[in-house]
Image 1: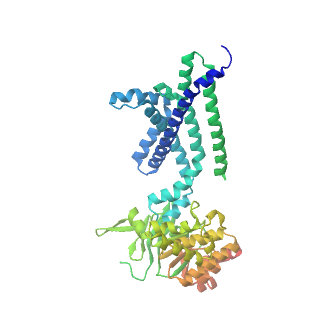
Image 2: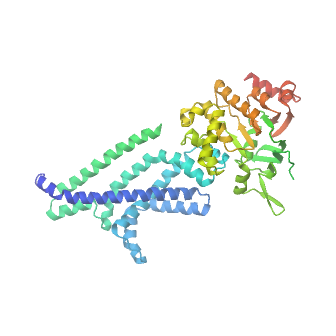
Length: 217
Length: 259
């Protein structure tokens, strides 16, 4: 046991911050992938090709119905059997990105359906081509509305990055575990890791809530 | 073949929504530059005519022509087949529409609402599209609202922008779908004045669904009374409004005046 050791804190801080950087990296890249792929999935579902729409639906349901951890194991441990070898961070980012894309796709879908039919009709009445209708009329109205929901998924992803530890990514929690294991002291590393998560995700959540209110009216 | 002096021709057009037959073998024509107003009770099929012309609905029977081209159909060899999206898009370009609820794009300012389609559909250079947009805004009395967002405008102002936006595409035919129904009488008056101006000063063919009877009398060359998916009376405004032949027309006009 023993109390709080500030000397130990300053000793492990650099390791923890290195881990935090990895957490950031995974969250950032995972979010970019989730936002982009989610939009593609949402558009494919609405493309009006029944086979494609059905396949996308199946894919989304499949990913949403299986644990992220299993998906990460699959990417990292099973794909090499098929000749696809990914670094642990790459596998982690793809895992997070694809998993969350299946949630953001639904968010985009709701946003797109929230644009009044009359906007489509106005675009038709002006003979705007389909792609132009999407890029200039529909998405600029749909996306701002769903930014808070997307923001919430970023926060949620941020808090799930420790799962990447299972495939060898040394994130913040991984760094805390290593720092603790070296000295057989876990109070400081895990407390600090928890505090860092809180310190970052709470203000982010407040920000998202503020955004929600702005978009709301 | 369509005659040269016809801008719009409906030939035995049938439109159903489920079991509900909205248009029953409707025949009607409008000449280039003619101002035609459709009146009649709600649900009589007036708005459906405009929506068919805009390609927002498809016919269940019969054909629609715009100028010398089929809108509802296209030629394949010597057969007439239902129009595909590309054909529809091409013919539809000759037609503009103003909606009851304005339907401006809220994510664009007034100027961009007016220039988006001329630039991306007609391929106009930006400067030309903007110069034309300014002329049109001047015409509808909103020159100073160039950079305003639609949400900052009153309903009447939004509708005048919507009229300018439709005209920016230089349509041969302008469809007006109850364009003042969503406006207070004061604001409606401003919109109707703008439309009177357009009717006087351009050669655009106007097809207008309205409950504003005084306006209809002022601008129309012909008024068509609709009931049950058919035209039951077709006459110049003075005749329809002052001495309608049909009892149904008289009843309808009476009811409109009372409300």
